[in-house]
Length: 161
Image 1 (cartoon, rainbow, N blue to C red):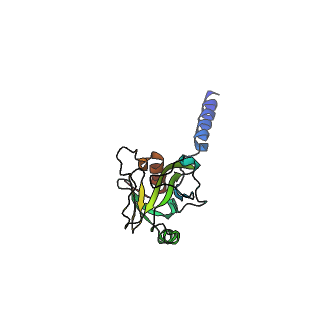
Image 2: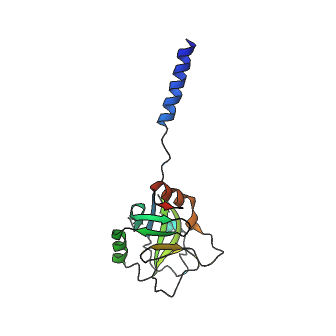
């Protein structure tokens, strides 16, 4: 009788571990900010109150690889075409980097020919490989290194460490 009870307890424990769901990682996405008139220094209202595009302009699916040490990444030719269509390479165009529904940081796209570089937030220079550069002001917390972004990119298989 004790052997049957022990076997039932072991089977129950095994079934409990089989039913536990794995950790689900959300996707890394970059959304265009639709609010008008944001000053060059960045938004004057909280990041959660900014109006974002319905669809991301860059998503995990668009990223071919992402180098964590340099924050340089490559995207598909289709994603490059979308950036060209939106005209993001011609001007300072704001974005918000998100993981799932969580807004992680504000930044902007900057033309490689631009003479202006943001000092208080990260920016993406659009060229063959994109790079998210940190804010030029060293006193600003570097939010590019957020663990949620790291885990999302690692889970997706896009991360180069």
